[in-house]
Image (cartoon, rainbow, N blue to C red; front, side, top):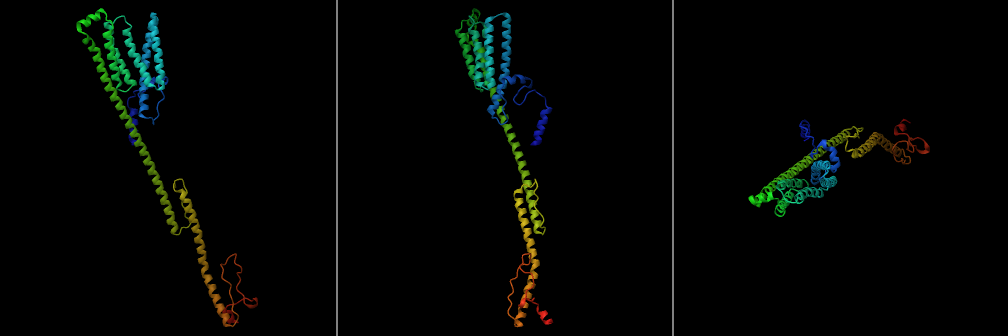
Length: 371
Protein backbone atom coordinates (compact mmCIF):
# COMPACT_ATOMS: atom_id res chain seq x y z
CA UNK A 1 0.00 0.00 0.00
CA UNK A 2 2.86 2.34 0.76
CA UNK A 3 4.39 1.52 -2.61
CA UNK A 4 1.13 2.36 -4.35
CA UNK A 5 0.91 5.59 -2.39
CA UNK A 6 4.44 6.45 -3.38
CA UNK A 7 3.76 5.64 -7.02
CA UNK A 8 0.61 7.73 -7.03
CA UNK A 9 2.53 10.61 -5.50
CA UNK A 10 5.24 10.28 -8.13
CA UNK A 11 2.59 10.13 -10.82
CA UNK A 12 1.04 13.33 -9.57
CA UNK A 13 4.44 14.99 -9.63
CA UNK A 14 5.12 13.85 -13.19
CA UNK A 15 1.62 14.73 -14.41
CA UNK A 16 0.57 18.12 -15.76
CA UNK A 17 0.26 20.88 -13.20
CA UNK A 18 -3.22 22.34 -13.45
CA UNK A 19 -2.54 24.96 -10.79
CA UNK A 20 -5.33 23.64 -8.54
CA UNK A 21 -5.40 21.55 -5.37
CA UNK A 22 -7.83 18.77 -4.38
CA UNK A 23 -10.61 21.33 -3.82
CA UNK A 24 -10.17 23.00 -7.21
CA UNK A 25 -8.44 25.96 -5.58
CA UNK A 26 -6.40 27.98 -8.09
CA UNK A 27 -2.95 28.74 -6.71
CA UNK A 28 -2.55 31.98 -8.65
CA UNK A 29 -5.84 33.18 -7.11
CA UNK A 30 -4.72 32.81 -3.48
CA UNK A 31 -4.82 36.52 -2.77
CA UNK A 32 -8.54 36.58 -3.53
CA UNK A 33 -9.25 33.37 -1.62
CA UNK A 34 -7.68 34.87 1.49
CA UNK A 35 -10.25 37.67 1.34
CA UNK A 36 -13.38 35.74 0.39
CA UNK A 37 -13.10 32.07 1.46
CA UNK A 38 -13.46 30.55 4.95
CA UNK A 39 -10.71 28.53 6.55
CA UNK A 40 -9.81 25.24 4.91
CA UNK A 41 -11.24 22.22 6.78
CA UNK A 42 -8.84 19.69 8.23
CA UNK A 43 -8.51 16.07 7.14
CA UNK A 44 -10.96 14.84 9.77
CA UNK A 45 -13.75 17.13 8.54
CA UNK A 46 -17.01 15.64 7.31
CA UNK A 47 -18.10 15.57 3.68
CA UNK A 48 -20.61 18.36 4.31
CA UNK A 49 -17.90 20.69 5.64
CA UNK A 50 -15.61 19.89 2.72
CA UNK A 51 -18.48 20.41 0.26
CA UNK A 52 -19.27 23.82 1.78
CA UNK A 53 -15.62 24.77 1.33
CA UNK A 54 -15.70 23.68 -2.34
CA UNK A 55 -18.86 25.69 -2.96
CA UNK A 56 -17.33 28.71 -1.21
CA UNK A 57 -14.32 28.53 -3.55
CA UNK A 58 -16.55 28.49 -6.63
CA UNK A 59 -18.78 31.23 -5.23
CA UNK A 60 -15.77 33.46 -4.56
CA UNK A 61 -14.73 33.23 -8.23
CA UNK A 62 -18.29 34.06 -9.33
CA UNK A 63 -18.41 37.06 -7.00
CA UNK A 64 -15.07 38.26 -8.37
CA UNK A 65 -16.40 38.13 -11.95
CA UNK A 66 -19.64 39.87 -11.01
CA UNK A 67 -17.74 42.60 -9.17
CA UNK A 68 -15.49 43.09 -12.19
CA UNK A 69 -18.50 43.45 -14.52
CA UNK A 70 -20.34 45.84 -12.22
CA UNK A 71 -17.21 47.94 -11.70
CA UNK A 72 -16.81 48.24 -15.47
CA UNK A 73 -20.44 49.35 -15.75
CA UNK A 74 -19.89 51.82 -12.90
CA UNK A 75 -16.89 53.43 -14.62
CA UNK A 76 -18.74 53.60 -17.95
CA UNK A 77 -21.70 55.27 -16.26
CA UNK A 78 -19.33 57.63 -14.48
CA UNK A 79 -17.70 58.73 -17.73
CA UNK A 80 -21.12 59.07 -19.35
CA UNK A 81 -22.37 60.99 -16.30
CA UNK A 82 -25.42 58.77 -16.08
CA UNK A 83 -26.45 59.30 -12.47
CA UNK A 84 -29.21 56.64 -12.28
CA UNK A 85 -26.87 53.94 -13.61
CA UNK A 86 -24.16 55.09 -11.19
CA UNK A 87 -26.55 54.72 -8.27
CA UNK A 88 -27.73 51.30 -9.44
CA UNK A 89 -24.17 50.06 -9.99
CA UNK A 90 -23.09 51.40 -6.60
CA UNK A 91 -25.99 49.59 -4.91
CA UNK A 92 -25.08 46.34 -6.66
CA UNK A 93 -21.44 46.72 -5.59
CA UNK A 94 -22.50 47.16 -1.96
CA UNK A 95 -24.73 44.07 -2.16
CA UNK A 96 -21.93 42.01 -3.72
CA UNK A 97 -19.50 43.11 -1.00
CA UNK A 98 -22.04 41.98 1.59
CA UNK A 99 -22.30 38.63 -0.21
CA UNK A 100 -18.51 38.45 -0.10
CA UNK A 101 -18.58 38.79 3.68
CA UNK A 102 -21.24 36.07 3.88
CA UNK A 103 -19.06 33.81 1.75
CA UNK A 104 -16.12 34.50 4.05
CA UNK A 105 -18.28 33.45 7.01
CA UNK A 106 -19.44 30.27 5.25
CA UNK A 107 -23.13 31.34 5.17
CA UNK A 108 -23.75 30.04 1.66
CA UNK A 109 -27.54 29.74 1.99
CA UNK A 110 -27.99 33.43 2.80
CA UNK A 111 -25.39 34.39 0.22
CA UNK A 112 -27.16 32.29 -2.42
CA UNK A 113 -30.48 33.99 -1.72
CA UNK A 114 -28.80 37.39 -2.11
CA UNK A 115 -26.87 36.58 -5.29
CA UNK A 116 -29.57 34.59 -7.11
CA UNK A 117 -32.24 37.07 -6.07
CA UNK A 118 -30.07 39.99 -7.17
CA UNK A 119 -29.56 38.50 -10.61
CA UNK A 120 -33.11 37.27 -11.23
CA UNK A 121 -34.99 40.20 -9.75
CA UNK A 122 -32.52 42.65 -11.26
CA UNK A 123 -33.11 41.27 -14.76
CA UNK A 124 -36.86 41.38 -14.25
CA UNK A 125 -36.72 44.96 -13.00
CA UNK A 126 -35.03 45.99 -16.23
CA UNK A 127 -38.21 44.92 -18.00
CA UNK A 128 -40.52 46.59 -15.51
CA UNK A 129 -38.54 49.84 -15.55
CA UNK A 130 -39.16 50.23 -19.29
CA UNK A 131 -42.29 52.15 -20.30
CA UNK A 132 -43.21 49.28 -22.59
CA UNK A 133 -41.94 45.80 -23.39
CA UNK A 134 -39.82 45.67 -26.54
CA UNK A 135 -38.54 42.84 -28.70
CA UNK A 136 -35.04 43.48 -27.34
CA UNK A 137 -36.37 42.85 -23.85
CA UNK A 138 -37.77 39.52 -24.97
CA UNK A 139 -34.30 38.55 -26.20
CA UNK A 140 -32.95 39.30 -22.72
CA UNK A 141 -35.07 36.53 -21.25
CA UNK A 142 -32.14 34.22 -21.98
CA UNK A 143 -30.12 35.95 -19.27
CA UNK A 144 -32.56 34.67 -16.65
CA UNK A 145 -31.10 31.18 -17.13
CA UNK A 146 -27.90 32.38 -15.46
CA UNK A 147 -29.83 32.38 -12.19
CA UNK A 148 -30.32 28.61 -12.58
CA UNK A 149 -26.56 28.11 -12.88
CA UNK A 150 -25.97 30.30 -9.84
CA UNK A 151 -28.57 28.40 -7.81
CA UNK A 152 -26.78 25.03 -8.01
CA UNK A 153 -23.61 26.67 -6.69
CA UNK A 154 -25.21 27.67 -3.41
CA UNK A 155 -28.10 25.22 -3.04
CA UNK A 156 -28.78 21.51 -3.67
CA UNK A 157 -29.38 20.23 -7.18
CA UNK A 158 -33.16 20.41 -6.96
CA UNK A 159 -32.93 24.21 -6.58
CA UNK A 160 -32.52 24.38 -10.38
CA UNK A 161 -36.19 23.45 -10.76
CA UNK A 162 -37.28 26.08 -8.24
CA UNK A 163 -35.41 28.91 -9.96
CA UNK A 164 -36.38 27.62 -13.42
CA UNK A 165 -40.10 27.55 -12.62
CA UNK A 166 -39.82 31.02 -11.07
CA UNK A 167 -38.14 32.32 -14.25
CA UNK A 168 -40.87 30.82 -16.43
CA UNK A 169 -43.47 32.52 -14.26
CA UNK A 170 -41.69 35.89 -14.60
CA UNK A 171 -41.49 35.49 -18.38
CA UNK A 172 -45.19 34.73 -18.64
CA UNK A 173 -46.18 37.62 -16.34
CA UNK A 174 -44.01 40.13 -18.20
CA UNK A 175 -45.38 39.21 -21.63
CA UNK A 176 -48.99 39.00 -20.50
CA UNK A 177 -49.26 42.02 -18.20
CA UNK A 178 -46.61 44.48 -19.43
CA UNK A 179 -47.56 46.88 -22.18
CA UNK A 180 -45.84 45.85 -25.42
CA UNK A 181 -44.44 48.20 -28.03
CA UNK A 182 -46.17 48.36 -31.43
CA UNK A 183 -43.52 46.12 -32.95
CA UNK A 184 -43.92 43.51 -30.22
CA UNK A 185 -47.71 43.76 -30.40
CA UNK A 186 -47.58 43.16 -34.15
CA UNK A 187 -45.32 40.14 -33.57
CA UNK A 188 -47.71 38.72 -30.99
CA UNK A 189 -50.64 39.27 -33.32
CA UNK A 190 -48.84 37.63 -36.22
CA UNK A 191 -47.18 34.64 -34.48
CA UNK A 192 -49.33 34.28 -31.42
CA UNK A 193 -48.49 34.55 -27.73
CA UNK A 194 -47.72 30.86 -27.36
CA UNK A 195 -45.02 30.97 -30.03
CA UNK A 196 -43.42 33.98 -28.37
CA UNK A 197 -43.34 32.17 -25.03
CA UNK A 198 -42.06 28.91 -26.49
CA UNK A 199 -38.48 29.99 -27.11
CA UNK A 200 -37.52 31.48 -23.69
CA UNK A 201 -39.50 28.94 -21.68
CA UNK A 202 -38.17 25.92 -23.62
CA UNK A 203 -34.64 27.24 -23.24
CA UNK A 204 -35.21 27.67 -19.51
CA UNK A 205 -36.58 24.13 -19.18
CA UNK A 206 -33.66 22.58 -21.08
CA UNK A 207 -31.07 24.45 -19.04
CA UNK A 208 -32.98 23.61 -15.86
CA UNK A 209 -32.90 19.85 -16.57
CA UNK A 210 -29.30 19.77 -17.81
CA UNK A 211 -28.11 21.82 -14.86
CA UNK A 212 -29.91 19.52 -12.43
CA UNK A 213 -28.40 16.39 -13.98
CA UNK A 214 -24.92 17.93 -14.15
CA UNK A 215 -25.06 19.16 -10.55
CA UNK A 216 -26.44 15.86 -9.25
CA UNK A 217 -23.84 13.74 -11.04
CA UNK A 218 -21.06 16.05 -9.87
CA UNK A 219 -22.27 15.86 -6.29
CA UNK A 220 -22.43 12.07 -6.45
CA UNK A 221 -18.93 11.95 -7.94
CA UNK A 222 -17.64 14.07 -5.07
CA UNK A 223 -19.34 11.74 -2.58
CA UNK A 224 -17.73 8.70 -4.21
CA UNK A 225 -14.34 10.39 -4.24
CA UNK A 226 -14.68 11.39 -0.61
CA UNK A 227 -15.76 7.86 0.32
CA UNK A 228 -12.84 6.36 -1.61
CA UNK A 229 -10.45 8.77 0.08
CA UNK A 230 -11.84 7.82 3.48
CA UNK A 231 -11.50 4.10 2.70
CA UNK A 232 -7.94 4.60 1.48
CA UNK A 233 -7.07 6.50 4.64
CA UNK A 234 -8.62 3.76 6.80
CA UNK A 235 -6.68 1.10 4.91
CA UNK A 236 -3.48 3.05 5.38
CA UNK A 237 -4.18 3.41 9.10
CA UNK A 238 -4.98 -0.30 9.40
CA UNK A 239 -1.76 -1.20 7.57
CA UNK A 240 0.25 1.02 9.91
CA UNK A 241 -1.48 -0.52 12.91
CA UNK A 242 -0.81 -4.06 11.64
CA UNK A 243 2.82 -3.15 11.08
CA UNK A 244 3.10 -1.74 14.60
CA UNK A 245 1.42 -4.83 16.07
CA UNK A 246 3.74 -7.11 14.11
CA UNK A 247 6.77 -5.19 15.32
CA UNK A 248 5.47 -5.31 18.88
CA UNK A 249 4.87 -9.06 18.59
CA UNK A 250 8.40 -9.57 17.28
CA UNK A 251 9.84 -7.64 20.20
CA UNK A 252 7.70 -9.58 22.68
CA UNK A 253 8.78 -12.90 21.14
CA UNK A 254 12.40 -11.79 21.31
CA UNK A 255 12.02 -10.84 24.98
CA UNK A 256 10.31 -14.16 25.78
CA UNK A 257 13.07 -16.06 24.01
CA UNK A 258 15.69 -14.09 25.93
CA UNK A 259 14.02 -14.93 29.26
CA UNK A 260 13.70 -18.60 28.22
CA UNK A 261 17.40 -18.77 27.30
CA UNK A 262 18.38 -17.25 30.64
CA UNK A 263 16.24 -19.73 32.59
CA UNK A 264 17.61 -22.65 30.56
CA UNK A 265 21.20 -21.53 31.15
CA UNK A 266 20.51 -21.12 34.86
CA UNK A 267 18.97 -24.58 35.11
CA UNK A 268 22.09 -25.99 33.40
CA UNK A 269 24.36 -24.61 36.12
CA UNK A 270 25.23 -21.10 35.00
CA UNK A 271 24.24 -19.24 38.16
CA UNK A 272 25.61 -15.87 37.03
CA UNK A 273 23.35 -15.47 34.00
CA UNK A 274 20.72 -12.71 34.12
CA UNK A 275 17.97 -11.33 31.89
CA UNK A 276 19.33 -8.29 29.98
CA UNK A 277 17.60 -5.02 30.91
CA UNK A 278 17.87 -3.28 27.52
CA UNK A 279 15.60 -0.90 25.62
CA UNK A 280 14.55 -3.68 23.24
CA UNK A 281 13.27 -5.78 26.12
CA UNK A 282 9.57 -4.95 26.25
CA UNK A 283 9.12 -7.32 29.21
CA UNK A 284 11.42 -5.30 31.42
CA UNK A 285 8.74 -5.04 34.10
CA UNK A 286 9.00 -8.79 34.78
CA UNK A 287 12.70 -9.13 33.96
CA UNK A 288 13.66 -7.30 37.17
CA UNK A 289 11.74 -9.66 39.49
CA UNK A 290 13.13 -12.66 37.57
CA UNK A 291 16.68 -11.38 38.10
CA UNK A 292 15.98 -10.86 41.82
CA UNK A 293 14.61 -14.41 42.05
CA UNK A 294 17.68 -15.80 40.29
CA UNK A 295 19.95 -13.90 42.70
CA UNK A 296 18.17 -15.32 45.72
CA UNK A 297 18.27 -18.80 44.22
CA UNK A 298 22.02 -18.39 43.66
CA UNK A 299 22.57 -17.47 47.30
CA UNK A 300 20.44 -20.45 48.36
CA UNK A 301 22.58 -22.73 46.19
CA UNK A 302 25.75 -21.37 47.77
CA UNK A 303 24.36 -22.03 51.27
CA UNK A 304 23.36 -25.56 50.28
CA UNK A 305 26.82 -26.21 48.83
CA UNK A 306 28.45 -25.02 52.05
CA UNK A 307 26.14 -27.30 54.06
CA UNK A 308 27.00 -30.24 51.84
CA UNK A 309 30.70 -29.58 52.40
CA UNK A 310 30.19 -29.54 56.19
CA UNK A 311 27.93 -32.61 56.33
CA UNK A 312 30.78 -35.27 56.28
CA UNK A 313 32.61 -33.49 59.12
CA UNK A 314 29.42 -33.43 61.16
CA UNK A 315 28.89 -37.15 60.61
CA UNK A 316 32.50 -37.82 61.61
CA UNK A 317 32.05 -35.85 64.80
CA UNK A 318 28.84 -37.71 65.62
CA UNK A 319 30.63 -41.03 65.09
CA UNK A 320 33.57 -40.04 67.29
CA UNK A 321 31.19 -38.76 69.96
CA UNK A 322 29.35 -42.09 70.02
CA UNK A 323 32.64 -43.99 70.20
CA UNK A 324 33.91 -41.88 73.07
CA UNK A 325 30.64 -42.28 74.94
CA UNK A 326 30.81 -46.06 74.57
CA UNK A 327 34.45 -46.15 75.72
CA UNK A 328 33.65 -44.07 78.77
CA UNK A 329 30.85 -46.37 79.81
CA UNK A 330 33.15 -49.38 79.32
CA UNK A 331 35.78 -47.92 81.64
CA UNK A 332 33.13 -47.43 84.29
CA UNK A 333 33.26 -43.73 84.32
CA UNK A 334 30.33 -41.46 84.78
CA UNK A 335 28.26 -41.04 81.76
CA UNK A 336 29.22 -38.06 79.70
CA UNK A 337 26.50 -35.86 78.23
CA UNK A 338 27.88 -34.27 75.12
CA UNK A 339 26.65 -30.85 74.24
CA UNK A 340 24.45 -30.63 71.18
CA UNK A 341 26.28 -30.26 67.95
CA UNK A 342 26.14 -26.83 66.44
CA UNK A 343 27.15 -25.45 63.13
CA UNK A 344 30.74 -24.35 63.28
CA UNK A 345 31.34 -20.78 62.55
CA UNK A 346 32.23 -17.45 64.03
CA UNK A 347 29.28 -17.61 66.44
CA UNK A 348 30.04 -21.13 67.79
CA UNK A 349 30.08 -20.95 71.62
CA UNK A 350 33.02 -23.33 72.01
CA UNK A 351 35.03 -24.85 69.21
CA UNK A 352 37.43 -26.68 71.57
CA UNK A 353 37.27 -30.50 71.97
CA UNK A 354 35.17 -31.84 74.89
CA UNK A 355 36.75 -32.30 78.29
CA UNK A 356 36.24 -35.01 80.93
CA UNK A 357 36.27 -34.89 84.71
CA UNK A 358 38.66 -32.38 86.27
CA UNK A 359 38.60 -30.25 83.18
CA UNK A 360 41.14 -32.41 81.37
CA UNK A 361 40.84 -32.96 77.68
CA UNK A 362 38.89 -36.04 76.77
CA UNK A 363 40.85 -38.37 74.50
CA UNK A 364 39.68 -41.00 72.14
CA UNK A 365 39.82 -44.77 72.76
CA UNK A 366 43.08 -45.01 70.87
CA UNK A 367 44.72 -42.65 73.30
CA UNK A 368 43.63 -44.82 76.27
CA UNK A 369 45.00 -47.91 74.62
CA UNK A 370 48.31 -46.21 74.02
CA UNK A 371 48.42 -45.21 77.67
